[in-house]
Image 1 (cartoon, helix red, strand yellow):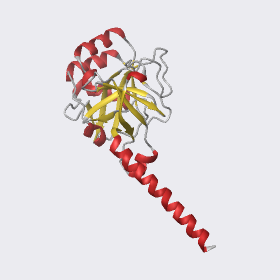
Image 2 (cartoon, helix red, strand yellow; image 1 turned 135 degrees about the horizontal axis):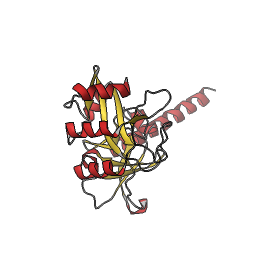
Image 3 (cartoon, helix red, strand yellow; image 1 turned 180 degrees about the vertical axis):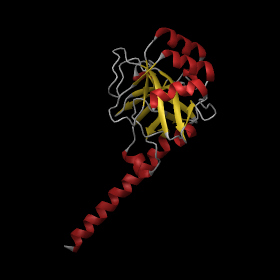
Image 4 (cartoon, helix red, strand yellow; image 1 turned 45 degrees about the vertical axis):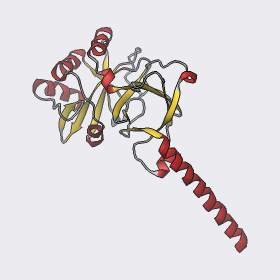
Amino acid sequence: MKKIILGISILFISIISIMLLIAVKEQRDIVARYITDEHYRYKPVEMKDEVYFPSTVDLGNENGLKEIGYLSVKNKSIVNDLLLIVGKVLVDESDKNYTHFSVIDDFAMNYTKGEYLQDKSIINYTMNKYNDFVLCNDKNDLETRITLEKDVLYMLQDEFKTIEYKADDFKNSDDRYYIYVNSPQKKLHGRTFDDPIIFMGCILVKDNKLYYGNFDNEIKGELLNKIILYIK
């Protein structure tokens, strides 16, 4: 009986050791992490010190893309990076700046660098093409998107211009409201968007103050009064 117990113990220890060795290898291969714990359909990702947001950019057939590592969850640990790896990160080899990347496996999604999405020509094009915008927030029990008037988004864009997104500001904020183009079907319930997925901006909440994009951009005055009506 003791031999059986000893054998089982050795087998168990061997399996754990193998899992830990695999985990260490996977940790070396992790190149991106979720920044927050919100729903993957709209939360940001950090890769190479840059902030990315979900998008519907077309990267073509995945067979033509290069795998550079893995996307993992926010909290770094051997267990998390062994058991909770999200998927493989694929990039276009010709895109040396990794402007876009694709994640395959469990939570398939494409991502685009926030810096790229803030290009004035892209913002203007999107504002001219679409009229329906929504605020997405993970703490809403009903998973309801809040319709945001286009004029308010114009005011935010005019006030704060180009935004530099900082991962630490997202991590240290008390709450976040992501601004996206609403689904073509104008669904206001559920987290999943119909195409296109177009990120427009983000309102951060910290110590009962509101910021647009980062903690350098505090929302004040008339604009603050308008925003509070949406997120009170």
